[in-house]
Image 1 (cartoon, rainbow, N blue to C red):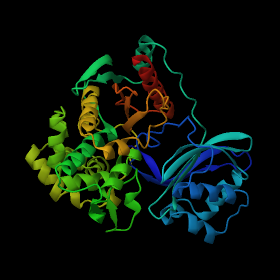
Image 2: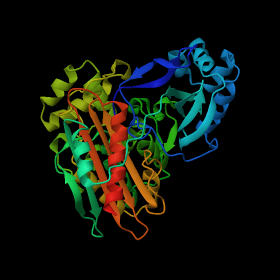
Image 3: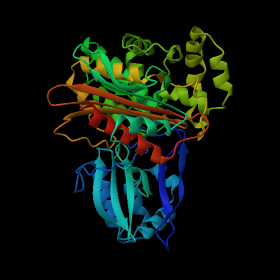
Length: 455
């Protein structure tokens, strides 16, 4: 979901040792979920060759360019977004390319049209390379980092619960079977009904509201949305970098919202269906936490928590629901994105977020599955966050995660060949400090273990 990140970033390396030392780039108060967006290292290789995608094309160029630094500035401008080069000047970029000179691709570990992760070898060391492109196909994000070590899969429920208790001061968990009637039947649970911050898992409600409106005939998956400047949010995502008033289909926006946690895509879809429609979907699927009303857009949350904090937050929280709605429309909507500054420590996690329990999350997945819309399945199947379940045993896998400083959540739905459906959700909350990258690996291992244990 949302937390501190770098929208246009590259890790600079010491030219003599080729080791990562510092990070340079433009900070923004977001990063994606989960997913590549949850800072989870994808361990399972999904491709041995460079994918035929916009991101893959830039990876191919980068590997070739790294054989001959310094690369002319005119060539760099043909491959990197202007916002990236403002944060990482060509001279700095060439220092990095020199440090990673002659890097060799080991394998692509995850691939989407606009983003990929890969393992590369340089100077005798293995690094994880993360690359993303904007709507024009230019590199908007580039990072080299040491790959995280995958956590071992728990072999028993007792081991899973013991390890979960060490993840965070407040952790909840649910492994449930979704019955043919749509009920969530718990198999194993820890604090399954306790509401915690959802991070970007709230976007499942948005997807549900969109799919319901499409089912009613209000519009279609091919309906075009206008990326109006006042609806642009902050990264994670790529739509915020596309030209003002350009178009994107509902389907593409939904794919971006779920697969790379695109915040502008999310806000466009909320605007399309209406805030109160999302609230009705949430309630109809069992979400009753009153802190979710009014249902915030991502841009609104960024303003409340990142623009002159805590001024807007305190005013907003002191108001009735009706006055909050008016404040969002008349005040928050007029705050420019440039006034939002990043935060890196937990902030207002009990009051300003989207809230739900593992049981609520399971019910959302059940609601989405009941729609029986193949497009919904297509959207949710793009990115499994590296869970890597056996495809013969689990041919269908859906995923959405969420995070911001102090919050890290993951949820998966998986279905067996004979139609048995399970949802596993793990939620971690630390109100005092943010999580390190290994926490994502641990949660992913616990979820992987749960799917092994439910069979």
